[in-house]
Image (cartoon, rainbow, N blue to C red; front, side):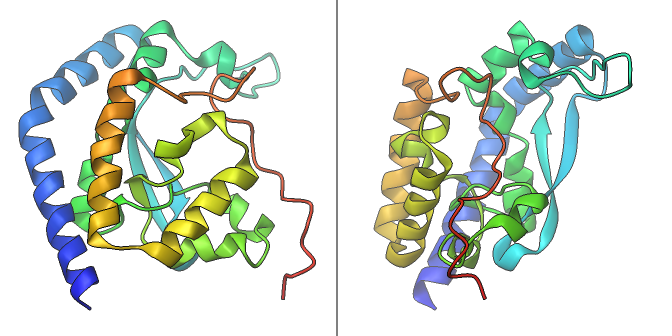
Length: 207
């Protein structure tokens, strides 16, 4: 009970302060995206929140909507612009999620909210990452982010779920600032972002 209340206070304080301080950066980013990639500057995408409940996650666009002759979106690497790469390297693309934190959809710290279509692919252990409110940053993000495999990432998420505390959350926030400045782990090797998750290959413990 104490942890839940303290975490919410930290979330509201950090998100409100972040929106106040970073609003000039967010306004500038929105203007630049509209100029370089056309509107809208922000996109909303359904993601899996706590217990797998759907919510709309907000991000600054970093990719165009270019499609092939059949109308299918081109691969991420072909749609990711130079300015979009900068947004990702600096994590500026994540800033609209501060509003998700204010709304209570997300926390500052927690497992990253992933696509709804991934939820049925989790095995029983991986599904435990949904026990916590998703975060803008998390234990997996400061320990490799997109440079580690899905299985490593999920193992770190589950470790966080089992070891949540105010001190751990503060540590994650401080280390996230360091990682953002060093621009580490932005993408997986050979990928523009992160390859799609197609299942762990071990579903034997599913119910």
